[in-house]
Image 1 (cartoon, rainbow, N blue to C red):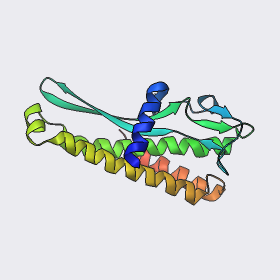
Image 2: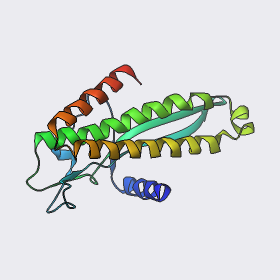
Image 3: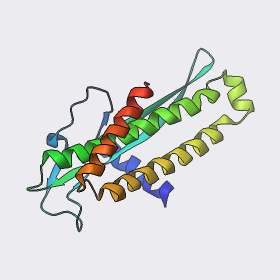
Length: 173
């Protein structure tokens, strides 16, 4: 399921625009398509994720990890462009950045010379670590929605916002 979902998301991302997470990245309703109706109680949906690219520079392996928001795939229901809901959606994007930083740190062990990378078959390990981190991120995103009831419990929403901001402050990329 997760591998298929990621492949679908990656294929969708190629058809739409990925916006990289940055500290000063604007985040507003202009980034969301408007829909006439949502799914059950869901009034907005943020499509965000993490990815990595491997390249060789001067016989050294470089791994670039990124987190992104998919513009044009994310949506909000007509009539629900409220600041509280936008704040909830922003944390989904921030959670992707938290897991991007965790993956980047984990990948330090694979930033070696080309021969070592090949001899130790690190390509497979990279993908295995990515799949594990992607699943952890996905579970974390679901826990966030469940705990805050999709942002409808103000006290819990504020706690998540504070906690995620604290994690981001303490784990500069």
